[in-house]
Amino acid sequence: FFFRADPVMSSKPTVDVGFVVVEMAKTGQSRCRKCADPIPKGELRVGLEAWISGRKAVTWQHPPCFLQGLRFAAATTGRSKCKATGDLMPKGAARLGLTSHTTTHWVGLEALPAVLEKISTGLHSPLALEEVEGFATLAPPEQQRV
Image (cartoon, rainbow, N blue to C red; front, side, top):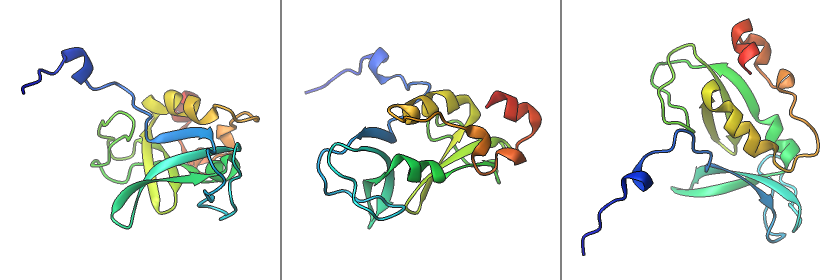
């Protein structure tokens, strides 16, 4: 059988935040990767894709633990890509890192609104980006964009 790809379906979305999962825990078996405490069934959890033992898995964290792993930093080389858009980030470009376990996903400022909207889903307190590690190191125009 031959299948023809639908051009609308095969076009790459501009921002894909599928690497972040925010949901209520389906069972009580998951543990937070930051504090190692169990995440009870029905409690809100945030998951990130990570490579563990040679395979892709979702690592779960309590929302406050996940927020502790956020950090702003400048791209150290011109080879890193935004996880949400796939675009190259030039050296020195501001980006947000989302960390879980040993994995950090970097997101450029262009994709920040979509990623933050997904993260803030279900959080009871507003996200104070000024308090995220590395925010003070951003240039004033970049701080304004955030």
